View 1: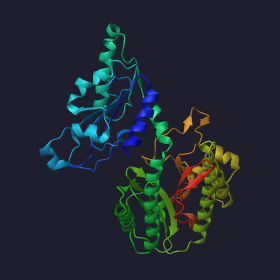
View 2 (view 1 turned 45 degrees about the vertical axis):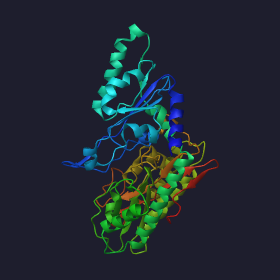
View 3 (view 1 turned 90 degrees about the horizontal axis):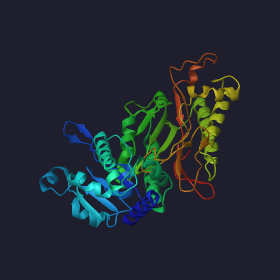
View 4 (view 1 turned 90 degrees about the vertical axis):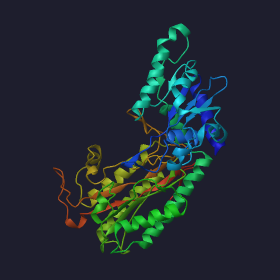
Length: 429
């Protein structure tokens, strides 16, 4: 993989020309008191380096005569490593990760200026680490203050996201291999969960079976908190309590994906826990599935991002009117977003190193992102009829037989040269 990381750095450095790009590792997150969560590196930092430790900085300086890729890392420290794990250290940062130069993180303020003073701008995303934001800004301000004496130095700071994230949007062959592995594990877990689920089990039992497979197959764990929502819980989009007992005639909505070497699967399936839909459940399921298949048909090179969503919205709105859950002119219902009483989210998102992955969706008010081969997105329409649903003014009262039905169907779809590939096709619909 080091060749892959180097290729990414070279591509980014070609784009920034005479600039210097700075990337900060993710901070450590504390679970409670002095116990830390398992560490998860910042996705941009990992994409460019493969380095998986906290308290590190990566600098890309393509204009520098000797050092184009520099790492600042925690030095080796036997006493601390006994408690918190082995560190790569300064020397191995060069050997293992291909850095032209590496320094202890404590030397950042001393060493960083030499990589900035001849750059024409700094590429850095002002993120959540306010202290480090101030570090970068203070270096920039000092260089600006002395610009008139040197005639060189960064005259601006530009957000690195707008250069790096379009790169992340198109998956390389190596990334696709990792994505396929993450998704294959996710597929196995969903299929096992469907066989395991039955009335009387608890949602957390299903969750445990799913996440057991994630780890058993070499995954890092769940890509996001697993949603195992039975009955009316499925009407809560991000339900994660997972503590209800499954009942006869319940639907079970499972939204879960495996993280494998930082890449993520994201699958949702909804099915009857006793193996048989009620008539109302089947009607809503068929409507959601029809909308999903129509949305997937729009995933092809050259199509605008929004076409899948627009097709799903139209089919769902027409179906809701036909069932008497909405009333009015279809065009007006869509324009006024009346369907949002039952379908309140978008039909998908980019997928990759992050579950809601990097990448722009829209350029200004009118121009949507165009789909290109190598992109991976989710397609996930749904209908959610809350038990306490109250119709808006002018909308019909609904029969109690519809209440508490929540259905979502989600697949991970790769844009190919000729159309698309449903990577999650191994889980039945």
